[in-house]
Length: 224
Image (cartoon, rainbow, N blue to C red; front, side, top):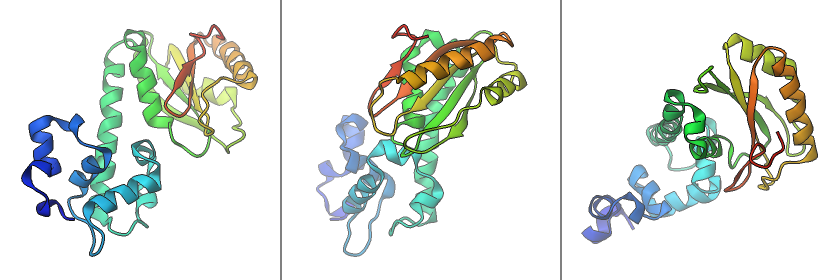
């Protein structure tokens, strides 16, 4: 069924304007963005197929242009719109972290990292480089690995911290398994990086482990 065939009060646009965006299901939100489907595949079916392919919005947020290109029904215009909306979401979460110390909103830091790293099928080690007032300078993906292992080189983290004139960092990595529990290897890596960065007077404020729907702070666990 196309959007125009729905009763007016059931169309995503009208529903959103009358009841707010939270009233729409995931499929309805994406259908509103896609607008049209394909012959034999309505826009809602296309939206659901895309969500299924990506593993929901979390996976869609990680999608690149080349990931969306093979999807039948997503031409250049639709792909560009989807990628633009996802980038707006990431920048919206990053903006407050650049304007105020991260400790003013620790949950926002977790939300930001969940958006950046959650749902990836491979392990990524990233660093939030902070200025001396603990405001975000940059989030950089430093190393990428497999499901089982990522090799992290402390000298590279130290080099980037010095290049950015960072005063502190927050370490972060994801567990593709979905479990956000820190491992012994995570604890060892944290202490190794903490010692290396201390040599250049850069503090490690936290190490966040991103799983499926959960972000665990090693500092809150007393593991820092």
